[in-house]
Length: 313
Image (cartoon, rainbow, N blue to C red; front, top):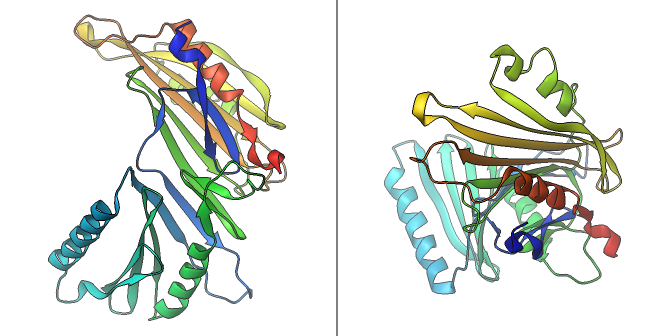
């Protein structure tokens, strides 16, 4: 095994963690969706979209990006749509934009610099209810704290921040890559309260409706079965498929894992992990520097490393 695979570091995903080789980084573009718990059953539901735009940002860089975003909104506005109605600083290093989408519908964006990471939180309101929507958005933002490795790890982790407070939905999508291992990409989807799908992972990939079966793909299943991940039952599927034609053929590895649980909760989330790796079969494409055995080893060490962060409490 490559020595570069042996030394690992830990990344947080939701209320869990995952270990990857040290050269891997969390790709920009992390996205999340939250629906905060409503105080009353008849309260307006608010969906908050959160994204990590970029890390390694200075205050001056952040201000330049805010100015650029304002100019972009103004330039794209039309007579009745996309009109900038509010632009102001809020809190410490945050900036609010309220954009009139059309008539009584508004999009509120809050851009924040937390540490050296640039985040955007968005919510949409209708029937001129942006004051209520922005109040809930501000309450949500007030429950965000810089992520840390201390005793309290009960927050929902998004890169450099933890989101606290109760939500009816918590979803995030993470992606990881490494310049040391080109062509290998690992993605994680984390959904706390979503029910399990009607068909399990293996049923979807190996059942009657499988695309692999429908198109009689040139593929090989390396491994499939059930396992236990962080006290949750899970299924995994490891295979490769030959893609392309003639001299442009190449082998593409596709691995997937998905947890299964009867009672979704903060301790029993749906975690879906995928690894894609290209292993070209011809000399006119960049070679993969990991063998099949090493790709499987990377998968095993990564997926088996998933742990609950709350166990540290």
